[in-house]
Amino acid sequence: DDDAALRRFAERNPGLVLLAEEDGHLVGSALGGWDGRRGWLYHVAVHRDERRRGIGGTLVAELERRMRDLGCPKLNLIVWDDNTYAMQFWEALGYRREKTVEYAKEL
Image 1 (cartoon, rainbow, N blue to C red):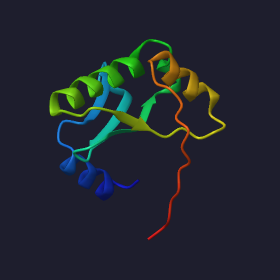
Image 2: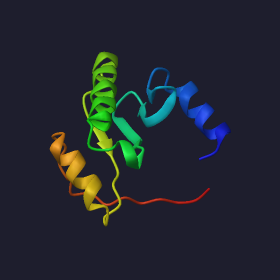
Image 3: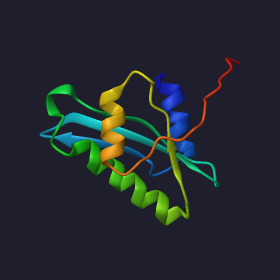
Image 4: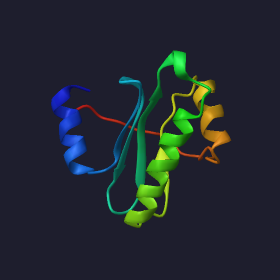
């Protein structure tokens, strides 16, 4: 992503781009999007040195709250199939693996 793409994303999803700061330093971020039917979680990330402190879970919980307030009934996300750390993180937060396959096409 570049700055212009992130700006467009934030404009389309007001209040769903979160930053976690500590002592003036960015330690985590999370992007949420809602199309009016399903919500999506994108790019939930915590700085490597700040992990295992609950920052990621706090960001996700806040996005879940905001999505629920918008009327969003379900959240989806994508995890690379070799990222077992991320799978463990999401499962610990109550997410389950769906039986779907992702398709994509460059435009």
